[in-house]
Image (cartoon, rainbow, N blue to C red; front, side):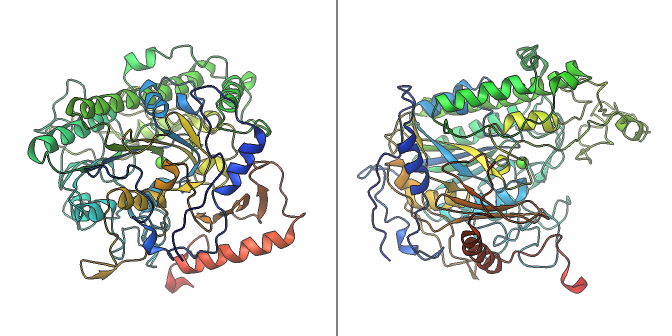
Length: 599
Ligand SMILES: [Ca+2]
């Protein structure tokens, strides 16, 4: 099968000119992205690099920066209809391309595995999280039969750097195996955390290269106040500066994985203060505002209905605390945005912004988990901390979540009597604000309805993307990031690496979409904790574990309110058969996964 070009009609609309999308064009564009062309996944190795390079004739390979945030919803950032101040991301969007149907896997570890490898997470060994369930697809550790983007681009002459959250290995012990840590998986330098969550003031598993450090004993980074989001931004800028100094002729790849805005709601007081009172009108108000803005921007269709409301603001007892949770969340996002601004400024200073592909996305939808929200958590958390002596500068923070203490020895607290933000608090923003984050979609992190898996994707590359400020309605998935990197870098996705056979690439390059052309694919699939889905053309088949299949027409109803499974049983059967073949091929096990001997 050749990698033929398919001429598309209007795939994008200019948001910059405030032109509101015509319904007919919008619907046409939605379906085109997954036109069934009869191609088996992985059947087009020749396609990579064969798509017309976006900036044909350019002299230098582009540098690439992939920025991913943690636990944020579709409509949080300004350029996706949000009320959080994100001027730097908005600026990238205004001179780049925004994808309206980009998807993650609904959870931290599987998203990182799929992003890094261009494979579905089960194929990469992270079928669930970092526990080992005894199957190759559920080792909780990156497989030897995949390569990371860093490993692929390194062979094409790239400097490779990672900053932030890793979370694709089960080995986190100080002296344990490190063969699946960033440096052993293709990165030249690493600053960040090996695990998935923790205090922003004292992250567990904070690490430089292969060595665990503390915020106090790191010889290379000594800020006045340690705040992890700033540390990620500063170290990313530092790596880019060092690269310029030591390898000015090489392109670079930087993977920046922020932990903002994953719980705990931790932000610096001066940032929180900017949002004081901002969320006092309650969930419903901001959700409606976001929905209206997203419609005006052309991000969602005017014909879709808003999914059901979670929570009733009038019924909320602790309104000040509840609003504060969202104020801190917004401050976390804004401080990330400010850091992204500093990274972009460094690229400008070096004169390399034009030929750097910057991608921004989020790892899963807004998080409904109730971390630290119970009224009685302090009975367990505070009383458990008997030793309240301050930690020494070299003492590693052993805890991801409470019971734990701050570096100066105070017990960490939660619950509705404690205002989130400072280091001695540990609180999630809760289901009802997550519902606002995921406007206009249903469900949350963990589930594969649209609220769990829909993410912004901003693509900014002045030398390669001419569609300034436009929207792309073609569906895409994390597995496409590797394919895109390999494509624009003219790299080779290997059949073998380190003597291991490498699973063929699943993703498709997004580069055609950069020039308003079709991304060819058969379908996109999801499985997490027994929540299952597949998307083919306008159809989405989805199931919330342990429930049955629902069928939605994504052109007419992307908010998944009108289940058509009863009306179109044959379509359900057709898509179910595709899903089952995919699940079998990728090593998906029934949920909950039973170890082989227990079967
Ligand atoms: Ca996450």
